[in-house]
Structures are given as structure tokens and as C-alpha cells.
Length: 240
Image (cartoon, rainbow, N blue to C red; front, side, top):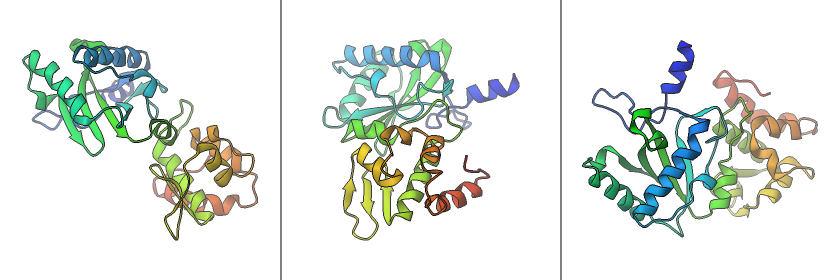
């Protein structure tokens, strides 16, 4: 029980109190969609109609609990300023200091979000992640409920496979040439056949385990996973 309580209090790390303690926590899977639906209603109240529920990234809403809510936002439809303005209006109308509720970093807008809109249930960190291709973003940053590995480990494995083929994997650009930097493909299915062989499928990239299952019988397997094996080892991890 003590371990469970510890796990569920660990969340995003953007919002902290004067003692540098997190003000947000993990969120149960059952609370994810109701919380996002509450956020959709909040935005709509201030003139922004946005779909959050159907644009979850990574393991958000897939695993029993999530450390934060990662949501993809199409920057062709919305701007950071537009969403920040709506969130600022919400905070000021409640007599709150927007600086304690809203932050910006890189491609993200962060919001200290009441779970299910109820502050008594605690807060979770909402990360609105802007990109120029939402469908690609959802593919590149997908997660899996049944994986023992993080999304970052999947990227390490994909990079290792690409390197063995003289290519580079980028979650932003797709598959590129190691020599010229030219983009070779940003199509998930085409990337699957390039990296995983002719039988590769885009859905194989959902987890480290699924990738390994697809390539484990290929004669080039050891070369494909060499870099990943080394990197995993430094973290005390083994390939499945």
C-alpha cells in the first residue's frame, strides 16, 4: 500500500511549491477522459472549441495511472497565445494568479488542472504539445498499455535499427539520411517496411516488445539492436 501511495503522488514537475515539492500528482485512468472533457468545456466557455480526448499522446489514458496528461495540438488550428488567453481568463475570473496555473516551455503549454474539475481531488499537469502534423505526432509519440518500457526506450530502439541501415530516426522528421539529412519518409507504414522489413506494420511501433517481436528472427537482428542493447544496459535494462 505504501508503494501504491508513493506511485500515485508522483506527477508532472512543472508546478511546485516554495519547498520545491510538486503541486500535481498522477491521475487514475478512469479520471483521464472526464478531466479532459472538463477542460474542453473550460476552453469552450472562453471561445475555443478543441478536442482533447481524441488527441492523447504517449501512454496517457492507456496505463492504470499517468504522471501527466500529454495532448497533441495542431498549431495550424490553434496558437499558444489563444489557449493561454482562455486559461488566463479562467484563472483571473476565479481570483487566481495565472502564473501559478499556466506555464510555457518549448512546444508546450502547461496547466495545473483540477482532476475532474474538482480541486478537492487534487491536480494533474496538463501538457498541451503543439505540432504541425497531429496524426504524425500521435504516431511518433504513441504509447502502449502492456509495455514495461517507456516511450523514450522505443525511440532508442528505433534509432538503433535506423543506424544499422545507415539512416536516422527522428520523432519530428521521421526517417532521414545519416549523410545528407534528407527526409526519406514520414509515412508510418513506409517507415515500418524500411526499418522492420517487408512484413513490418506501422502498429509494430507501439512498444519495444512489439518491435522486437517483429525483427527477432531477422538475420541482421544483432546489428539492428546493438546500440539499443548498449544504451539499455547503462540503465540496467535488458531487451525483451
